[in-house]
Length: 163
Length: 163
Image 1 (cartoon, rainbow over the protein chains, first blue to last red):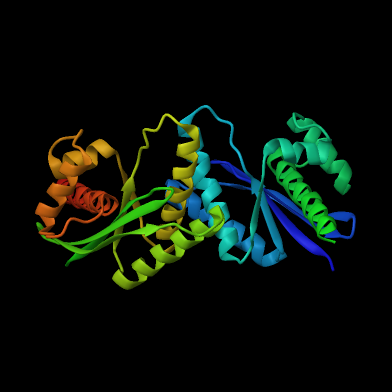
Image 2: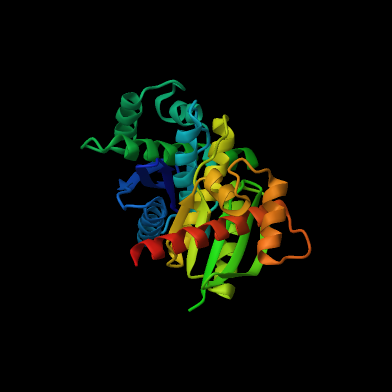
């Protein structure tokens, strides 16, 4: 039975999302894009993220969810800002009954580009190739699709290991 | 007309809340306590915070909300963790139609203890005195009540200035 996975690349201004459908070993891109948080106050920007992500979840009905686990910033202020968006995305997905898997950036890059220190452009190129996407999406979206692909690989490994 | 204010002191493990009712220049404590996030995964802990805070909002129907604005940690990891809880609390309050005011720690301490560098114990003692609370609450709750009191002072100043 096909499974839909939503991947989220959270950011304090732009949060990318990417939904793929997997069936056996085949992957298909379903939807991708980003939420640009533009409202005036922080609380309202987080509400915008919650509302727009909820809408995407309601439309595409993903079965599983994944997000990047580690943030390497040296700056506490940037980490706090990212935490707001990441927490909002996680609670929104949990509220819709989705279990949220977390993967380290290296693991995600390794999964799509076979190289843990791959650059954004390499990740983007590989995501487009793996999913047969013709027009280059914004990096936030390809990063999010990469997270979905990583989750697809990890769950297959787990399923195989459980057999 | 009396106005109910909810103050939130977010934390990655414990989030304090404090609700006061103001009528003219009088303040009354309505409810205070904390949410101890104990579920297994981060997404589930944030969902727990969202659910328990939503319940408190539904029970006490506050009209206005306030939260601490600045986090002084030197550690990005701690800031990211706090951001998750802070973002979840903010989006939950915004979802319930509450406008969320933000105040710096110094401003909050100044507001209740007349001293911006007051310690937790001083803040707690002053909050108890100002609100006539007999039994010492957990610091997370007195900090949250201090945030509500700070908002009460700031909105009165604004209302006076607008006259």
